Image (cartoon, rainbow, N blue to C red; front, top):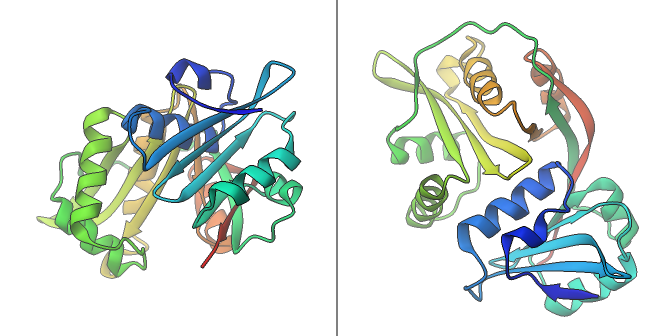
Length: 245
């Protein structure tokens, strides 16, 4: 049975994985008081086994291995969605063919990375422009700024930038920080600074800061798996996204 989640404590059963990080961080950011941000918990025989978030039509699914996927499938089709993000295994159990998929990597540490000049409170417009230049589809700057600032203020996200001679060279985010796990992302390096270790340094720095929790990152393509392995990450699974027109 699926019911609306009204309290953050109801999500405490979720595993320490990247999907739980996303769902719990979104709940902490928005709470249960907005129509555009809804959260549900599935129970089987009175035991919680899955959670779903739906924010602006984008679903995230997290399960603990005992979910009722037939019920989840009917529910998702009934509520409707633009995108669904979940693990590769869960996507297959739902019977969907993902639109995009690649590796999930987890931080193990143990790598020594050279320190660089990192900055925490950086010009958001310059960050936005760098991400767009590197191929991220972020939409309107105003919406980006509002979302980022809200999550930064709520403590469910953090940002780090690499600067050289007053110029932005790279950026990275802890996009979603939950109670047990953290999902990093939005890693970008300006074209003229690539290959010089800026991204390695700031990703390593932010991962080490969060290392009391499980720290994950979704590789954007298979070619980045080797890059992250060099700075202390290992492949632990596959993420998937389903997009609907």
